[in-house]
Length: 272
Image 1 (tube, rainbow, N blue to C red):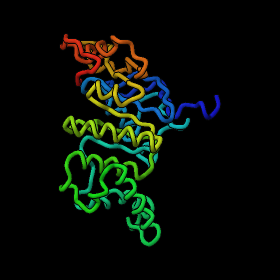
Image 2: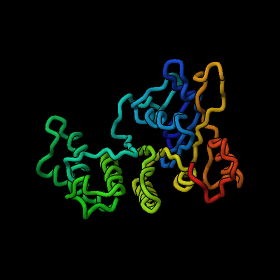
Image 3: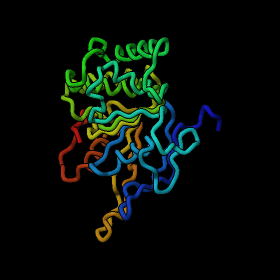
């Protein structure tokens, strides 16, 4: 296989357990550079755990998780940026300062500051990024002066300033009202294309997963043992290219994730 055809990420026989409790079992997937993978599933099924494994905050119990044929590092690095639902901003810094601080510590770990030409270049780059996420007019504001949607835009700019190859989104829009979420959807799609990102996004909203992603993974626990409830973990039960979906698949997924809900979801969808 040529390098051009090699997957960026390889997941091989991956298991994750905590003591006697298995969270994820036997995951096997390949992901190419530039894909936008959305992850849905019931609460506690391991979606966020998998995202943390991609980031390097968690390690697998067995199996392999490879980035460019190499094991993913055990600590977060520049190649992988993450945006959580809870905004990870520094309240005592302005919008512009929040964006540049990570790069300043990266370039000057002892002082945490840059000066002269390097500082001017970084500020210019940060301002271009703030313009892309729609925060140019707010660069001198502090986080408490921003709306929820603006703080989430700031968190995305913080992640992108480090030029990650992989962007990890952990329910980033769950706390936003529908109108702002629609604006954020358009923004993240624009940024995905412009920055040529590979994105993994956890969402509780099935419709959002189908709308944003090029590929949808459904995490579900299919094996159960009443005598040993922690013996089995979730698997990826659906792996779908969004544009190639059979007409009844949405209903099947909705019912598998909400077994108590006997109503059908339309193609326009309901939230999980």
